[in-house]
Length: 118
Length: 499
Image (cartoon, rainbow over all chains, first blue to last red; front, side):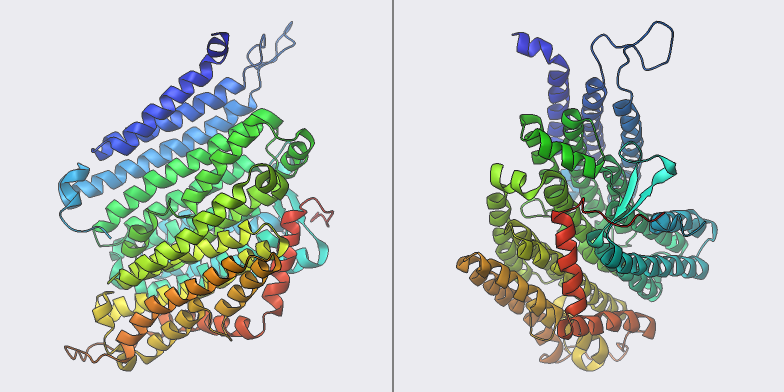
């Protein structure tokens, strides 16, 4: 039991990751797929942020009387990864707009059988 | 001043050129700028290849922050070799693209094409030169996002769906790499590749590192389209504009192979990955199944671009096969095939693009009688096709030779036989197209079909001549690939610093 409680941050991450992955694979609507992709990526962001925590450490800002700080590096890394994620979402949504114009739908099963895709 | 920052130029030049291409607006100027930047990067990477062979690895601290704290640009022979291939292909494709995209992409979007191409080149150069694991992820995503855009520029509306699927698969792959890098950081507290390698070998195996490796290998396998994670590749290469297919088929997946080699050999070390994790069995199995399944799929397709796309997945199988032989000879054969495959696939996709330009179709029936109507294009296609099959006097033969030798060195007779059988399948799918071009008569004699424009033929033939030249005189490529394999296995060997 303490194993589960001690690692609760990882359980949150695993749950979000699987939920996002499930949506990406099984959603029929392209916008929902992009949302799933976002949840999937966010879970990884949370993993990075949570591993930066040092027990008893304060926020990484220099102040009097504080000697132990959390590790800021994973947070900075994930700032970059968030930017990458936003860019991916933007490209994905832009593609969906063009797909909607070209096919008149964003439901995958509706354009699948219109013409073979390969 | 410039000399000091020489090593970062292959990343900075295309990155700066990208927004300028948009500002220049449509057409000629953007093309000229992109081609010149790409050619400059090529010259720089050749110089770097020269000096890495003579002096050893070159290192540059980005922003003056010393490694392992800051981001390091680290160039050894392996990165310089692949970088030379990528920039050379990029330059040739850009020369070729001018005539090719005139028909395939709306003229208002030409500047965007060059911008996306420059961003993709910057990302690929970054992946190849960086010495930092997280930085590698960022550059991978820069190049991937540019790639999705490039694929979606095609006028064919199916390109949009291909691009979207590619985006979904590619993002999942990249996120897996991100998870893996996070796990490595969690265990070792560093992101610099050399530092990681030192700490992993000092600490030994742990469950976190094992999981990280698993995530990275799966993520990179998606990016390099290892069977069975290749499903995004055939539609994307089929529906993308021809110039884009030629560029991506010969660079993007090859750079991903480089990433896999980096992680396996430089960071984790072959002992960790192959001896204690046993990854060689999995990679070998997937590579062989991939070679046969995808060569077979290639033989069934009516669309010639799809044939070449499936063939790309099969050829990636050969590279992974070389890596999974777990020997310096096997790794060297894999790296050599990265170089050689870029030459042949680039030429093949360029030839198909020329056919698309003149006949308006890439169906195999459009090739009927083209041997007479487009003699230069079809001759280029035939020679590059023979190279793909592995005929003597072409680079394809050199690759197969070293691959088979590496397999025989370990008494793996079965693998050597399977490599040769794979070549027979290549003969089937290339043979069908060549037969259509030379043996079949034109059904509807279309007099408008004439030879491709000079601007497309020249880059195509440069690649074809390179196919033959490096097939006869392979001392340069084999020497560089051998040095590259040595560097990958022993990355921290002391070398000259650039500053």
